[in-house]
Image (tube, rainbow, N blue to C red; front, top):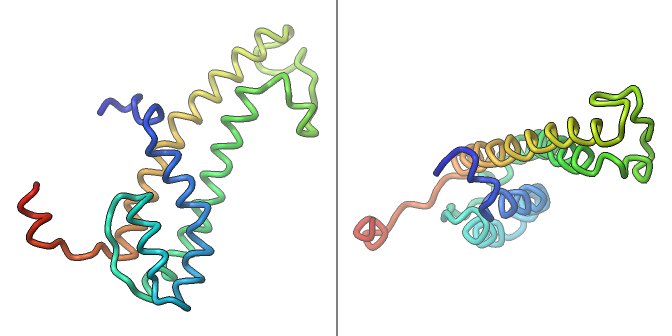
Length: 150
């Protein structure tokens, strides 16, 4: 897959949903031995993980850091693509001295390029996060049927 095609697939959005659910699932995994976490990971990450109380909880600090980084990137996408709507978010709406100014069209165009850059970046950050999470949580051992299919 080309590096630019990833944001057009459903993968970054599934991984974002998993990231939003990951800390509550890690806490809940202590109570149910990771059964719900395993089902959600299978559905959203498309990989089987082992049921365990501690392994899913082990990834919680990584989840917290990833939530901040990925949240910042998604915020960069929204705020830059919707540049004229910044006053609705409580930000300064003056565009005459911003990048691309003094016209609104120029400022919006420059910020939209930044938003597209964030959009491309966040997809790859999420893919790296999912790989790290799967490594920490532990992939389930493959059955003979899975090996024969590939």
